[in-house]
Image 1: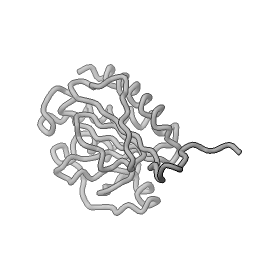
Image 2: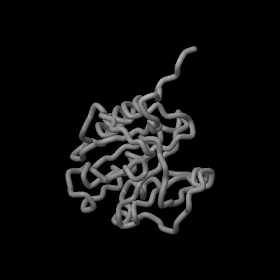
Image 3: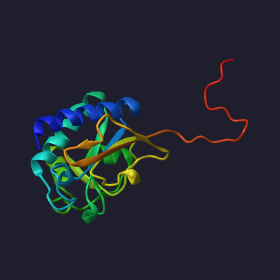
Image 4: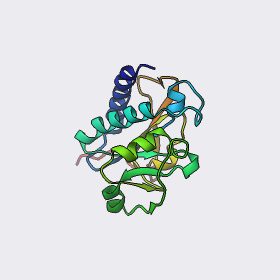
Length: 184
């Protein structure tokens, strides 16, 4: 796996997701990632800290300039809890839980996020406006309803399948409802 190529492809994938999601400063973007799948292994079996470090670093470089916060989902061994900055958790009223991710209990991206964030904490639940799922890690539980699939230009990153989600407000009403502003 060429790490430089990984960063380039990830940048292009995130560019596609950001364009589709139209996120605003202060919004939340969730990453679910199996570095095992990226390097061609089986999820949870071949965690790669170098790949996790590059994934988190690249995402932070793209999200910080537009004011979007990153949340990094851990694996099922820590109940898919997420690393976020403490100030984000406190501002949003998320309950902070006690766990520190490890390579085989959280995963490489969670460990990397815990090392790279300024004041990292773990939370159990978030409501993100968009997210990226690398390696079929199931991020849907963390993306705001209504979720809409995003098709980035690459559907694989290394050996991992890539999907993405954005959210939109619900359509409510009935046959007389309008969903676009009416000019008067």
